[in-house]
Image (cartoon, rainbow, N blue to C red; front, top):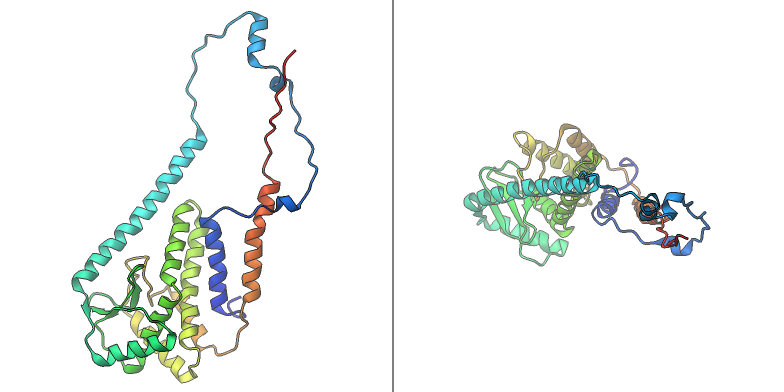
Length: 307
């Protein structure tokens, strides 16, 4: 669907599924559906209590009870341990990376760069303060920080048009709250750490995040500007490495992801909005409430009195 629909709406269609994984509750539509289901059959052992059988035989059972393993409890604690491990791992990496940034980052004092940032903020309607820093040990520009987001630039020299692309790209990430989206995806991956499909989903979302941001950055750009943008990305990732934290944006991507990203940038064909895809995903996610409610067994509260 990436060849037909806009990456922006595909990106937010994934958000519906992520929220569905984090918040498993669905609206109960069973009140609108009336179905007469057959009553569950009861066997003799359910009707006659075990104590009455013991009294009739006149014998007492003194066999020692063997402790049994509650597999549901064991599974719950295993899941909880895995979730806590994933969250602790990513939190440790993030705080360690932030410690390095706080030690080595310096504020950008170049007046031309600061003015360019302010001009782009005005164009995008961003009024909040956005710190702009430079760090020598990173290879790719990034936006980092959930509470106080800041733009971090590598110490490499950039052309004026490249700085416009970079700063606008990161400001769009800021305006769309993509860092909070990344945190939500990480939470979903931590909750469903045992499901390999969730990691495939997270990788697809990360790729669409950058592609959709490129679309907005180059919304009114011509083909020559798009070509310059691709050249800048290739130069940035030439010696780049993977981001050291999951709570940051990055120009880096895998080989296949970068190939799709470059083709998307150079593709000037007008795409559909993808609103239909978003609505279908939303309806299917909410509609799972019907399936869950209709397949949930209803416990019978009827108590049979032995005669």
